[in-house]
Image (cartoon, rainbow, N blue to C red; front, side, top):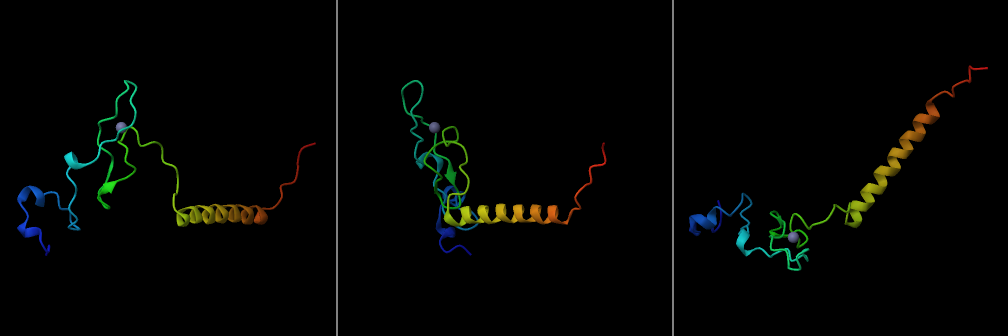
Amino acid sequence: MAKQGRTLPAVVQDLVDETHVPITPKRDRPRCGAKTRSGGKCQARAVWDREKNKPRNGRCRMHGGNLRGPTTKLGRAICRVSALLLNARRLARLAREPIEEDTEA
Ligand SMILES: [Zn+2]
């Protein structure tokens, strides 16, 4: 099935996932490099995107930062549309509901 998988040594074969994309071994992945409180550079490995076989943002799991929401034009557009749809549904529901009479006083 794999074009070249059978010729690879077992150790390397273990690193080949089901899509037959070789995964870079942990020891070959770049270091995070963030400035530490002790003045040095963070030695932890960068968080790895296994599908793309590259670092996600070059930083480790401690220094990657918070999620910043959708980053592509398409992602932002989807967010905008779904927010507009939600508001439209809320308005439509309000328009259907009868206005409550004030029964007090
Ligand atoms: Zn780090």
